[in-house]
Amino acid sequence: MQPRRDATPVAEGTALGAEPGKAVLEIRDLRVSYGGVRALRDVSVTVGEGEIVAVLGNNGAGKSTLLRAISGTLALQRGTVDSGSIVLHGRNLAGLDPADVVRAGVVQVPEGRRIFGDLTVEENLRAGTFGRIGRKGVAAAHERVIDLFPRLHERRGQRAGLLSGGEQQMLAIGRALMSDPKVLLLDEPSLGLAPQLVDRIGEVVQQINAQGTAVVLVEQNAAMPLHIAHQAFVLDVGKVALKGSAKELAATEEVRKRYLGIAGEGEPEVVTAEPIQRVTKGKRNPRPLAVQGITVRFGGLLALSEVSLSVAPGDTHAIIGPNGAGKSTLLNVLTGVYKPSSGGVDYGGKPLTRMRPPEIAALGISRTFQNLALSPTSTVRENLLLGRHRLSKAGFVTGGLRLPRARRELAEQERVVNGIGALWGLADVLDTRMGALPYGVRKRAEVARALCAEPSLLLLDEPVAGMSADESAEMARSIVQTREALGISIVLVEHHMPFVMGLAHRVTVLDFGKVISDGTPQHVQRDPEVLRAYLGFAEGSHEAGEETPGGDAAGRVSERSETP
Image 1 (cartoon, rainbow, N blue to C red):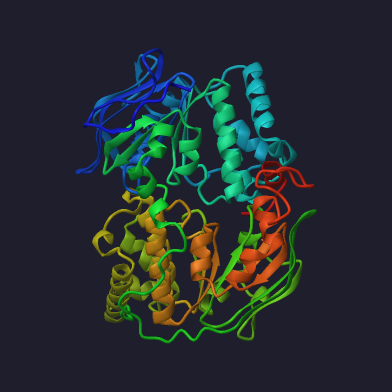
Image 2: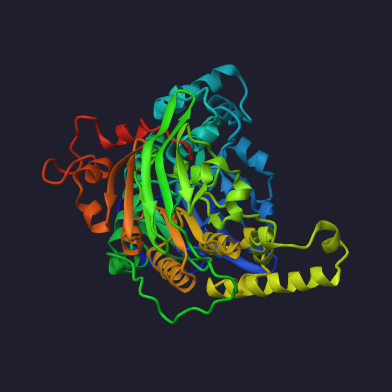
Protein backbone atom coordinates (compact mmCIF):
# COMPACT_ATOMS: atom_id res chain seq x y z
CA MET A 1 0.00 0.00 0.00
CA GLN A 2 1.22 3.47 -0.84
CA PRO A 3 2.14 5.98 1.87
CA ARG A 4 -0.81 7.90 3.24
CA ARG A 5 -1.34 11.48 2.25
CA ASP A 6 -3.88 14.13 3.07
CA ALA A 7 -7.25 14.15 1.37
CA THR A 8 -7.69 17.59 -0.11
CA PRO A 9 -9.94 19.37 -2.57
CA VAL A 10 -8.31 19.53 -5.99
CA ALA A 11 -8.36 21.86 -8.92
CA GLU A 12 -9.62 20.66 -12.30
CA GLY A 13 -7.10 18.45 -14.07
CA THR A 14 -5.13 17.51 -10.95
CA ALA A 15 -3.92 13.90 -11.07
CA LEU A 16 -3.92 11.38 -8.30
CA GLY A 17 -2.88 7.77 -7.90
CA ALA A 18 0.45 6.10 -7.40
CA GLU A 19 3.46 7.70 -5.83
CA PRO A 20 6.19 8.59 -8.38
CA GLY A 21 7.19 5.41 -10.12
CA LYS A 22 5.88 3.13 -12.81
CA ALA A 23 2.26 3.79 -13.77
CA VAL A 24 0.04 1.27 -15.50
CA LEU A 25 -2.71 3.66 -16.56
CA GLU A 26 -2.61 7.44 -16.84
CA ILE A 27 -5.67 9.55 -17.59
CA ARG A 28 -4.97 13.20 -18.31
CA ASP A 29 -7.39 16.12 -18.68
CA LEU A 30 -10.20 13.91 -19.94
CA ARG A 31 -13.31 15.60 -21.30
CA VAL A 32 -16.34 13.53 -22.32
CA SER A 33 -19.76 14.56 -23.57
CA TYR A 34 -23.07 13.00 -24.61
CA GLY A 35 -24.38 15.08 -27.48
CA GLY A 36 -23.83 18.62 -26.29
CA VAL A 37 -23.87 17.73 -22.59
CA ARG A 38 -20.48 17.66 -20.88
CA ALA A 39 -20.17 14.61 -18.58
CA LEU A 40 -16.47 14.73 -17.57
CA ARG A 41 -14.41 17.89 -17.20
CA ASP A 42 -10.62 17.72 -17.13
CA VAL A 43 -10.50 14.51 -15.10
CA SER A 44 -7.03 13.12 -14.41
CA VAL A 45 -6.02 9.97 -12.53
CA THR A 46 -2.97 7.74 -12.37
CA VAL A 47 -3.17 4.05 -11.52
CA GLY A 48 0.13 2.59 -10.38
CA GLU A 49 1.26 -0.99 -10.61
CA GLY A 50 -0.25 -3.08 -7.83
CA GLU A 51 -2.88 -0.47 -6.94
CA ILE A 52 -6.58 -0.51 -6.31
CA VAL A 53 -8.03 2.92 -7.10
CA ALA A 54 -11.58 3.66 -5.96
CA VAL A 55 -13.86 6.05 -7.85
CA LEU A 56 -16.66 7.46 -5.71
CA GLY A 57 -19.51 9.92 -6.17
CA ASN A 58 -23.26 10.17 -6.30
CA ASN A 59 -25.33 8.92 -9.22
CA GLY A 60 -24.69 11.15 -12.21
CA ALA A 61 -21.24 12.21 -11.03
CA GLY A 62 -19.55 10.58 -14.04
CA LYS A 63 -18.16 7.35 -12.57
CA SER A 64 -19.52 4.95 -15.19
CA THR A 65 -18.73 7.47 -17.93
CA LEU A 66 -15.08 7.37 -16.86
CA LEU A 67 -15.00 3.57 -17.13
CA ARG A 68 -16.71 3.68 -20.53
CA ALA A 69 -14.12 6.15 -21.77
CA ILE A 70 -11.28 3.91 -20.61
CA SER A 71 -12.81 0.73 -22.10
CA GLY A 72 -13.74 2.39 -25.41
CA THR A 73 -17.47 1.69 -25.01
CA LEU A 74 -18.66 5.31 -24.90
CA ALA A 75 -19.99 5.15 -28.45
CA LEU A 76 -22.54 2.52 -27.38
CA GLN A 77 -24.14 5.24 -25.24
CA ARG A 78 -23.55 7.93 -27.91
CA GLY A 79 -20.76 9.50 -25.92
CA THR A 80 -17.48 10.93 -27.22
CA VAL A 81 -14.04 11.77 -25.83
CA ASP A 82 -13.64 15.45 -26.68
CA SER A 83 -10.07 15.85 -25.43
CA GLY A 84 -7.49 14.37 -23.13
CA SER A 85 -5.56 11.10 -23.12
CA ILE A 86 -5.92 7.59 -21.70
CA VAL A 87 -2.46 6.00 -21.72
CA LEU A 88 -1.71 2.35 -20.92
CA HIS A 89 2.04 1.68 -20.72
CA GLY A 90 2.73 4.52 -23.16
CA ARG A 91 -0.07 3.69 -25.61
CA ASN A 92 -2.99 6.10 -25.96
CA LEU A 93 -6.26 4.15 -25.80
CA ALA A 94 -8.54 7.11 -26.52
CA GLY A 95 -10.47 6.45 -29.72
CA LEU A 96 -9.59 2.75 -29.95
CA ASP A 97 -12.19 0.12 -30.71
CA PRO A 98 -13.34 -1.74 -27.53
CA ALA A 99 -11.85 -4.98 -28.87
CA ASP A 100 -8.46 -3.32 -29.26
CA VAL A 101 -8.69 -1.97 -25.71
CA VAL A 102 -9.26 -5.53 -24.45
CA ARG A 103 -6.30 -6.78 -26.48
CA ALA A 104 -4.19 -4.02 -24.97
CA GLY A 105 -4.99 -5.35 -21.49
CA VAL A 106 -7.95 -3.34 -20.11
CA VAL A 107 -11.20 -5.20 -19.39
CA GLN A 108 -14.40 -3.84 -17.88
CA VAL A 109 -16.98 -5.70 -15.80
CA PRO A 110 -20.08 -3.57 -16.45
CA GLU A 111 -22.72 -2.65 -13.94
CA GLY A 112 -25.52 -5.20 -13.68
CA ARG A 113 -23.70 -8.57 -14.06
CA ARG A 114 -24.20 -8.86 -17.81
CA ILE A 115 -23.50 -12.54 -18.23
CA PHE A 116 -24.93 -14.70 -21.04
CA GLY A 117 -27.90 -16.23 -19.27
CA ASP A 118 -28.60 -18.96 -21.84
CA LEU A 119 -25.00 -20.19 -21.88
CA THR A 120 -23.47 -22.42 -19.25
CA VAL A 121 -20.96 -21.16 -16.71
CA GLU A 122 -18.14 -22.83 -18.63
CA GLU A 123 -19.29 -21.31 -21.93
CA ASN A 124 -19.39 -17.85 -20.33
CA LEU A 125 -15.82 -18.30 -19.14
CA ARG A 126 -14.65 -19.42 -22.58
CA ALA A 127 -16.26 -16.30 -24.04
CA GLY A 128 -13.88 -14.27 -21.89
CA THR A 129 -10.78 -15.67 -23.62
CA PHE A 130 -11.18 -13.10 -26.41
CA GLY A 131 -7.78 -11.89 -27.61
CA ARG A 132 -5.83 -14.73 -26.01
CA ILE A 133 -3.50 -16.91 -28.04
CA GLY A 134 -2.58 -20.45 -27.02
CA ARG A 135 -4.18 -23.11 -24.89
CA LYS A 136 -1.57 -22.80 -22.17
CA GLY A 137 -2.54 -19.22 -21.37
CA VAL A 138 -6.25 -20.04 -21.39
CA ALA A 139 -5.69 -22.99 -19.06
CA ALA A 140 -3.71 -20.83 -16.62
CA ALA A 141 -6.39 -18.13 -16.63
CA HIS A 142 -9.10 -20.76 -16.08
CA GLU A 143 -7.20 -22.21 -13.13
CA ARG A 144 -6.89 -18.72 -11.62
CA VAL A 145 -10.64 -18.10 -11.93
CA ILE A 146 -11.58 -21.45 -10.42
CA ASP A 147 -9.15 -20.88 -7.56
CA LEU A 148 -10.85 -17.54 -6.83
CA PHE A 149 -14.38 -18.87 -7.33
CA PRO A 150 -14.63 -22.62 -6.60
CA ARG A 151 -18.40 -22.35 -6.87
CA LEU A 152 -18.11 -21.69 -10.60
CA HIS A 153 -16.38 -25.05 -11.05
CA GLU A 154 -19.23 -26.77 -9.22
CA ARG A 155 -21.76 -24.98 -11.46
CA ARG A 156 -19.74 -25.23 -14.68
CA GLY A 157 -22.47 -27.10 -16.58
CA GLN A 158 -25.39 -25.02 -15.25
CA ARG A 159 -27.09 -22.33 -17.30
CA ALA A 160 -25.78 -18.98 -16.05
CA GLY A 161 -29.26 -17.46 -15.86
CA LEU A 162 -30.07 -19.88 -13.04
CA LEU A 163 -27.23 -18.70 -10.80
CA SER A 164 -27.85 -16.51 -7.77
CA GLY A 165 -27.05 -12.81 -7.99
CA GLY A 166 -23.80 -13.32 -6.10
CA GLU A 167 -22.75 -16.22 -8.32
CA GLN A 168 -23.53 -14.18 -11.44
CA GLN A 169 -21.25 -11.42 -10.14
CA MET A 170 -18.50 -13.99 -9.57
CA LEU A 171 -19.01 -15.24 -13.13
CA ALA A 172 -18.86 -11.72 -14.59
CA ILE A 173 -15.55 -11.05 -12.81
CA GLY A 174 -14.22 -14.49 -13.70
CA ARG A 175 -15.08 -14.03 -17.38
CA ALA A 176 -13.16 -10.73 -17.40
CA LEU A 177 -10.12 -12.39 -15.80
CA MET A 178 -10.01 -15.02 -18.55
CA SER A 179 -8.26 -12.47 -20.79
CA ASP A 180 -5.58 -11.86 -18.09
CA PRO A 181 -6.02 -8.06 -18.00
CA LYS A 182 -3.37 -5.62 -16.83
CA VAL A 183 -6.12 -3.34 -15.56
CA LEU A 184 -9.55 -4.55 -14.39
CA LEU A 185 -12.41 -2.03 -14.38
CA LEU A 186 -15.20 -2.95 -11.96
CA ASP A 187 -18.47 -1.00 -12.18
CA GLU A 188 -20.61 -1.44 -9.04
CA PRO A 189 -19.62 -5.08 -8.31
CA SER A 190 -21.53 -5.08 -5.00
CA LEU A 191 -24.77 -3.86 -6.58
CA GLY A 192 -27.76 -5.65 -5.05
CA LEU A 193 -25.69 -8.03 -2.93
CA ALA A 194 -26.14 -8.82 0.76
CA PRO A 195 -23.57 -7.39 3.23
CA GLN A 196 -21.81 -10.74 3.67
CA LEU A 197 -21.31 -11.13 -0.06
CA VAL A 198 -20.16 -7.52 -0.45
CA ASP A 199 -17.36 -8.34 1.99
CA ARG A 200 -16.53 -11.44 -0.03
CA ILE A 201 -16.35 -9.43 -3.27
CA GLY A 202 -13.99 -7.02 -1.53
CA GLU A 203 -11.75 -9.89 -0.50
CA VAL A 204 -11.74 -11.23 -4.07
CA VAL A 205 -10.78 -7.82 -5.46
CA GLN A 206 -7.84 -7.74 -3.04
CA GLN A 207 -6.79 -11.24 -4.15
CA ILE A 208 -6.95 -10.25 -7.81
CA ASN A 209 -4.87 -7.18 -7.06
CA ALA A 210 -2.33 -9.20 -5.06
CA GLN A 211 -1.88 -11.44 -8.12
CA GLY A 212 -0.62 -8.45 -10.11
CA THR A 213 -3.72 -6.91 -11.68
CA ALA A 214 -4.37 -3.21 -11.11
CA VAL A 215 -8.01 -2.44 -10.33
CA VAL A 216 -10.19 0.63 -10.88
CA LEU A 217 -13.24 0.16 -8.64
CA VAL A 218 -16.40 2.24 -9.11
CA GLU A 219 -18.91 1.94 -6.28
CA GLN A 220 -21.93 3.86 -5.01
CA ASN A 221 -21.50 2.23 -1.60
CA ALA A 222 -18.24 3.82 -0.44
CA ALA A 223 -17.57 1.65 2.62
CA MET A 224 -16.10 -1.39 0.87
CA PRO A 225 -13.88 0.40 -1.69
CA LEU A 226 -12.48 2.81 0.90
CA HIS A 227 -11.58 -0.21 3.05
CA ILE A 228 -9.63 -2.06 0.34
CA ALA A 229 -8.34 0.67 -2.01
CA HIS A 230 -4.91 2.28 -1.95
CA GLN A 231 -6.02 5.57 -3.50
CA ALA A 232 -9.43 7.11 -4.06
CA PHE A 233 -11.00 10.08 -5.68
CA VAL A 234 -14.47 11.56 -5.60
CA LEU A 235 -16.26 12.84 -8.68
CA ASP A 236 -18.85 15.56 -8.38
CA VAL A 237 -20.77 16.65 -11.51
CA GLY A 238 -18.01 15.39 -13.78
CA LYS A 239 -15.08 16.94 -11.87
CA VAL A 240 -12.56 15.57 -9.39
CA ALA A 241 -13.67 17.06 -6.08
CA LEU A 242 -11.52 15.13 -3.57
CA LYS A 243 -8.47 12.92 -3.82
CA GLY A 244 -6.04 11.12 -1.56
CA SER A 245 -5.26 7.82 0.08
CA ALA A 246 -8.35 5.76 0.75
CA LYS A 247 -7.75 5.77 4.51
CA GLU A 248 -7.39 9.53 4.67
CA LEU A 249 -10.41 10.06 2.44
CA ALA A 250 -12.56 7.75 4.57
CA ALA A 251 -11.70 9.82 7.63
CA THR A 252 -12.80 13.15 6.16
CA GLU A 253 -16.07 14.53 7.46
CA GLU A 254 -17.29 15.44 3.97
CA VAL A 255 -16.94 11.91 2.62
CA ARG A 256 -18.45 10.37 5.75
CA LYS A 257 -21.53 12.56 5.46
CA ARG A 258 -22.01 12.59 1.71
CA TYR A 259 -21.05 9.09 0.67
CA LEU A 260 -21.14 6.85 3.73
CA GLY A 261 -24.42 8.20 5.07
CA ILE A 262 -22.98 8.74 8.55
CA ALA A 263 -25.04 11.85 9.16
CA GLY A 264 -28.19 10.06 8.15
CA GLU A 265 -27.70 6.70 9.84
CA GLY A 266 -30.75 4.84 11.02
CA GLU A 267 -34.13 4.42 9.39
CA PRO A 268 -34.90 6.54 6.36
CA GLU A 269 -37.41 9.32 6.76
CA VAL A 270 -40.64 7.92 5.34
CA VAL A 271 -43.12 10.52 6.54
CA THR A 272 -45.03 11.80 3.56
CA ALA A 273 -44.72 15.43 2.59
CA GLU A 274 -47.68 16.82 0.68
CA PRO A 275 -50.24 14.28 -0.57
CA ILE A 276 -49.63 13.45 -4.22
CA GLN A 277 -52.26 14.05 -6.85
CA ARG A 278 -53.94 11.04 -8.42
CA VAL A 279 -53.32 11.01 -12.18
CA THR A 280 -55.31 7.89 -13.05
CA LYS A 281 -59.06 7.45 -12.72
CA GLY A 282 -59.62 3.80 -11.84
CA LYS A 283 -59.63 2.37 -8.31
CA ARG A 284 -56.92 -0.13 -7.43
CA ASN A 285 -58.86 -2.35 -5.01
CA PRO A 286 -55.93 -4.51 -3.83
CA ARG A 287 -56.85 -8.02 -2.73
CA PRO A 288 -55.33 -10.45 -0.23
CA LEU A 289 -52.28 -12.37 -1.46
CA ALA A 290 -51.72 -15.86 -0.05
CA VAL A 291 -48.62 -17.95 -0.82
CA GLN A 292 -49.23 -21.52 0.30
CA GLY A 293 -46.47 -24.13 0.57
CA ILE A 294 -44.55 -23.12 -2.58
CA THR A 295 -41.73 -25.47 -3.56
CA VAL A 296 -39.55 -24.84 -6.62
CA ARG A 297 -36.96 -27.23 -8.03
CA PHE A 298 -34.51 -26.76 -10.89
CA GLY A 299 -33.44 -30.27 -11.76
CA GLY A 300 -32.06 -31.63 -8.51
CA LEU A 301 -31.70 -28.16 -7.02
CA LEU A 302 -34.24 -27.10 -4.38
CA ALA A 303 -34.68 -23.31 -4.68
CA LEU A 304 -37.80 -22.89 -2.49
CA SER A 305 -39.14 -25.31 0.09
CA GLU A 306 -42.70 -25.07 1.47
CA VAL A 307 -42.74 -21.27 1.50
CA SER A 308 -45.91 -19.66 2.84
CA LEU A 309 -46.80 -16.04 3.57
CA SER A 310 -49.74 -13.65 3.32
CA VAL A 311 -50.00 -9.99 2.32
CA ALA A 312 -52.93 -7.89 3.54
CA PRO A 313 -54.50 -5.39 1.10
CA GLY A 314 -52.73 -2.03 1.23
CA ASP A 315 -49.73 -3.34 3.21
CA THR A 316 -46.03 -3.34 2.35
CA HIS A 317 -44.64 -6.84 2.90
CA ALA A 318 -40.85 -7.28 2.75
CA ILE A 319 -39.10 -10.50 1.73
CA ILE A 320 -35.50 -10.49 2.90
CA GLY A 321 -32.63 -12.94 3.22
CA PRO A 322 -29.00 -13.45 2.18
CA ASN A 323 -28.06 -13.88 -1.49
CA GLY A 324 -29.29 -17.20 -2.81
CA ALA A 325 -32.09 -17.43 -0.24
CA GLY A 326 -34.84 -17.65 -2.90
CA LYS A 327 -36.24 -14.10 -2.88
CA SER A 328 -36.22 -13.38 -6.61
CA THR A 329 -37.33 -16.94 -7.32
CA LEU A 330 -40.44 -16.25 -5.26
CA LEU A 331 -41.16 -13.05 -7.23
CA ASN A 332 -40.83 -15.06 -10.43
CA VAL A 333 -43.42 -17.50 -9.10
CA LEU A 334 -45.80 -14.65 -8.26
CA THR A 335 -45.55 -13.30 -11.81
CA GLY A 336 -45.88 -16.70 -13.51
CA VAL A 337 -42.32 -16.82 -14.86
CA TYR A 338 -41.60 -19.97 -12.82
CA LYS A 339 -44.09 -22.75 -12.15
CA PRO A 340 -43.75 -24.30 -8.68
CA SER A 341 -43.29 -28.03 -8.17
CA SER A 342 -45.99 -27.87 -5.51
CA GLY A 343 -48.05 -25.34 -3.59
CA GLY A 344 -50.18 -22.46 -4.79
CA VAL A 345 -50.59 -18.68 -4.88
CA ASP A 346 -54.00 -17.06 -4.50
CA TYR A 347 -54.70 -13.38 -5.24
CA GLY A 348 -58.24 -12.41 -4.31
CA GLY A 349 -59.57 -15.83 -5.28
CA LYS A 350 -57.52 -16.12 -8.46
CA PRO A 351 -55.00 -19.03 -8.60
CA LEU A 352 -51.87 -17.36 -9.99
CA THR A 353 -49.92 -20.59 -10.36
CA ARG A 354 -52.41 -21.73 -13.02
CA MET A 355 -52.09 -18.53 -15.04
CA ARG A 356 -49.66 -17.25 -17.65
CA PRO A 357 -47.67 -14.01 -17.05
CA PRO A 358 -49.93 -11.83 -19.28
CA GLU A 359 -53.01 -13.06 -17.40
CA ILE A 360 -51.37 -12.27 -14.06
CA ALA A 361 -50.44 -8.78 -15.30
CA ALA A 362 -54.05 -8.27 -16.36
CA LEU A 363 -55.11 -8.82 -12.74
CA GLY A 364 -53.16 -5.70 -11.77
CA ILE A 365 -49.83 -7.24 -10.70
CA SER A 366 -46.75 -5.35 -11.86
CA ARG A 367 -43.06 -5.64 -11.00
CA THR A 368 -39.62 -4.10 -11.27
CA PHE A 369 -36.40 -6.04 -11.74
CA GLN A 370 -33.15 -6.34 -9.81
CA ASN A 371 -31.21 -5.67 -13.03
CA LEU A 372 -32.86 -2.80 -14.86
CA ALA A 373 -35.16 -4.02 -17.65
CA LEU A 374 -35.47 -0.75 -19.56
CA SER A 375 -34.78 0.04 -23.20
CA PRO A 376 -31.62 2.18 -23.12
CA THR A 377 -32.13 3.50 -26.66
CA SER A 378 -35.73 4.66 -26.01
CA THR A 379 -36.69 7.81 -24.16
CA VAL A 380 -38.07 7.79 -20.63
CA ARG A 381 -41.49 8.67 -22.05
CA GLU A 382 -41.39 5.72 -24.47
CA ASN A 383 -40.38 3.35 -21.67
CA LEU A 384 -43.24 4.58 -19.48
CA LEU A 385 -45.75 4.30 -22.34
CA LEU A 386 -44.66 0.68 -22.74
CA GLY A 387 -45.79 0.15 -19.14
CA ARG A 388 -49.33 1.09 -20.20
CA HIS A 389 -49.42 -1.43 -23.04
CA ARG A 390 -51.84 -3.80 -21.30
CA LEU A 391 -54.33 -0.95 -20.86
CA SER A 392 -54.39 -0.02 -24.55
CA LYS A 393 -57.60 -0.84 -26.42
CA ALA A 394 -56.84 0.43 -29.89
CA GLY A 395 -55.82 -2.38 -32.20
CA PHE A 396 -52.81 -2.53 -34.51
CA VAL A 397 -54.72 -1.32 -37.56
CA THR A 398 -56.54 1.46 -35.68
CA GLY A 399 -53.28 2.68 -34.16
CA GLY A 400 -51.33 2.40 -37.41
CA LEU A 401 -53.92 4.46 -39.29
CA ARG A 402 -53.98 7.08 -36.51
CA LEU A 403 -57.77 7.00 -36.40
CA PRO A 404 -59.51 9.45 -34.00
CA ARG A 405 -60.08 6.78 -31.35
CA ALA A 406 -56.40 5.83 -31.36
CA ARG A 407 -55.33 9.47 -31.15
CA ARG A 408 -57.61 10.07 -28.17
CA GLU A 409 -56.28 6.99 -26.41
CA LEU A 410 -52.66 8.01 -27.02
CA ALA A 411 -53.37 11.49 -25.66
CA GLU A 412 -54.81 9.94 -22.48
CA GLN A 413 -51.86 7.56 -22.15
CA GLU A 414 -49.41 10.43 -22.48
CA ARG A 415 -51.35 12.47 -19.91
CA VAL A 416 -51.00 9.67 -17.37
CA VAL A 417 -47.31 9.14 -18.22
CA ASN A 418 -46.65 12.86 -17.78
CA GLY A 419 -48.37 12.78 -14.40
CA ILE A 420 -46.54 9.71 -13.10
CA GLY A 421 -43.28 11.07 -14.48
CA ALA A 422 -43.83 14.29 -12.52
CA LEU A 423 -44.66 12.35 -9.33
CA TRP A 424 -41.42 10.43 -9.59
CA GLY A 425 -39.16 13.38 -10.42
CA LEU A 426 -38.82 12.52 -14.12
CA ALA A 427 -40.63 15.47 -15.70
CA ASP A 428 -37.41 17.10 -16.92
CA VAL A 429 -36.02 13.93 -18.52
CA LEU A 430 -39.11 12.40 -20.18
CA ASP A 431 -37.68 13.01 -23.64
CA THR A 432 -34.12 11.95 -22.71
CA ARG A 433 -32.79 8.61 -23.93
CA MET A 434 -32.77 6.19 -20.99
CA GLY A 435 -29.19 5.04 -21.50
CA ALA A 436 -27.87 8.59 -21.10
CA LEU A 437 -29.30 8.99 -17.59
CA PRO A 438 -27.61 8.28 -14.24
CA TYR A 439 -28.30 4.93 -12.62
CA GLY A 440 -30.40 6.42 -9.80
CA VAL A 441 -32.73 8.15 -12.27
CA ARG A 442 -33.14 4.92 -14.22
CA LYS A 443 -34.08 3.10 -11.00
CA ARG A 444 -36.85 5.64 -10.43
CA ALA A 445 -37.98 5.25 -14.03
CA GLU A 446 -38.20 1.48 -13.52
CA VAL A 447 -40.67 1.95 -10.65
CA ALA A 448 -42.57 4.64 -12.56
CA ARG A 449 -43.00 2.32 -15.55
CA ALA A 450 -44.41 -0.40 -13.31
CA LEU A 451 -46.87 2.13 -11.86
CA CYS A 452 -47.96 3.14 -15.35
CA ALA A 453 -49.67 -0.25 -15.60
CA GLU A 454 -51.99 0.89 -12.74
CA PRO A 455 -51.27 -2.14 -10.53
CA SER A 456 -53.11 -3.08 -7.38
CA LEU A 457 -50.09 -5.19 -6.31
CA LEU A 458 -46.58 -3.83 -6.96
CA LEU A 459 -43.58 -6.16 -6.70
CA LEU A 460 -40.29 -4.30 -6.13
CA ASP A 461 -37.02 -6.22 -6.60
CA GLU A 462 -34.08 -4.35 -5.02
CA PRO A 463 -35.42 -0.80 -5.67
CA VAL A 464 -32.52 0.99 -3.92
CA ALA A 465 -29.61 -1.28 -4.87
CA GLY A 466 -26.65 0.93 -5.73
CA MET A 467 -28.22 4.13 -4.38
CA SER A 468 -26.75 6.56 -1.86
CA ALA A 469 -28.33 7.17 1.56
CA ASP A 470 -30.07 10.33 0.35
CA GLU A 471 -31.38 8.64 -2.80
CA SER A 472 -32.65 5.68 -0.77
CA ALA A 473 -34.51 8.02 1.60
CA GLU A 474 -36.09 9.82 -1.36
CA MET A 475 -37.12 6.50 -2.90
CA ALA A 476 -38.71 5.50 0.43
CA ARG A 477 -40.70 8.73 0.54
CA SER A 478 -41.92 8.25 -3.03
CA ILE A 479 -42.97 4.64 -2.40
CA VAL A 480 -44.91 5.57 0.75
CA GLN A 481 -46.62 8.50 -0.95
CA THR A 482 -47.60 6.30 -3.88
CA ARG A 483 -48.87 3.49 -1.66
CA GLU A 484 -50.98 5.84 0.46
CA ALA A 485 -52.34 7.82 -2.48
CA LEU A 486 -53.26 4.78 -4.59
CA GLY A 487 -54.00 2.29 -1.80
CA ILE A 488 -51.93 -0.45 -3.43
CA SER A 489 -50.20 -3.43 -1.85
CA ILE A 490 -46.43 -3.79 -2.16
CA VAL A 491 -44.15 -6.83 -1.94
CA LEU A 492 -40.60 -5.64 -1.46
CA VAL A 493 -37.35 -7.58 -1.92
CA GLU A 494 -34.37 -5.59 -0.66
CA HIS A 495 -31.01 -5.95 1.15
CA HIS A 496 -30.95 -2.41 2.58
CA MET A 497 -32.23 -3.13 6.08
CA PRO A 498 -32.93 0.43 7.31
CA PHE A 499 -34.95 0.96 4.12
CA VAL A 500 -36.90 -2.28 4.65
CA MET A 501 -37.58 -1.74 8.34
CA GLY A 502 -38.78 1.81 7.72
CA LEU A 503 -41.29 0.75 5.06
CA ALA A 504 -42.60 -2.71 5.83
CA HIS A 505 -45.67 -3.62 7.87
CA ARG A 506 -44.53 -7.25 7.93
CA VAL A 507 -41.33 -9.10 7.03
CA THR A 508 -40.71 -12.66 5.85
CA VAL A 509 -37.11 -13.94 6.03
CA LEU A 510 -35.88 -16.67 3.70
CA ASP A 511 -32.69 -18.69 4.06
CA PHE A 512 -31.70 -21.54 1.74
CA GLY A 513 -35.21 -21.46 0.27
CA LYS A 514 -37.05 -21.82 3.57
CA VAL A 515 -38.95 -19.37 5.78
CA ILE A 516 -36.93 -18.88 8.97
CA SER A 517 -38.87 -15.94 10.39
CA ASP A 518 -42.09 -14.01 9.74
CA GLY A 519 -43.49 -11.10 11.68
CA THR A 520 -43.26 -7.40 12.36
CA PRO A 521 -39.96 -5.61 11.61
CA GLN A 522 -39.29 -5.35 15.36
CA HIS A 523 -39.78 -9.10 15.82
CA VAL A 524 -37.59 -10.04 12.86
CA GLN A 525 -34.75 -7.73 13.90
CA ARG A 526 -34.39 -9.63 17.20
CA ASP A 527 -34.85 -13.15 15.84
CA PRO A 528 -31.67 -15.23 16.51
CA GLU A 529 -32.20 -17.21 13.29
CA VAL A 530 -32.20 -13.99 11.26
CA LEU A 531 -29.01 -12.78 12.93
CA ARG A 532 -27.38 -16.11 12.20
CA ALA A 533 -28.45 -16.06 8.53
CA TYR A 534 -27.24 -12.51 7.93
CA LEU A 535 -24.23 -12.22 10.18
CA GLY A 536 -23.14 -15.80 10.73
CA PHE A 537 -23.65 -15.54 14.50
CA ALA A 538 -26.54 -15.30 16.93
CA GLU A 539 -26.82 -12.35 19.28
CA GLY A 540 -25.26 -13.18 22.62
CA SER A 541 -23.69 -16.42 21.41
CA HIS A 542 -20.92 -15.40 19.00
CA GLU A 543 -18.83 -12.40 18.28
CA ALA A 544 -19.05 -10.80 14.86
CA GLY A 545 -16.57 -12.45 12.50
CA GLU A 546 -16.29 -15.64 14.60
CA GLU A 547 -16.83 -18.86 12.73
CA THR A 548 -20.09 -20.71 13.24
CA PRO A 549 -20.50 -24.49 12.99
CA GLY A 550 -21.46 -24.02 9.33
CA GLY A 551 -18.24 -22.23 8.43
CA ASP A 552 -17.30 -18.60 7.98
CA ALA A 553 -19.57 -16.01 6.42
CA ALA A 554 -17.82 -15.92 3.06
CA GLY A 555 -17.78 -19.70 2.78
CA ARG A 556 -21.42 -19.95 3.74
CA VAL A 557 -22.49 -17.45 1.12
CA SER A 558 -20.51 -19.21 -1.58
CA GLU A 559 -22.54 -22.37 -0.95
CA ARG A 560 -25.78 -20.71 -2.04
CA SER A 561 -27.39 -21.62 -5.34
CA GLU A 562 -30.57 -19.70 -5.95
CA THR A 563 -31.85 -18.54 -9.30
CA PRO A 564 -31.80 -14.79 -9.87
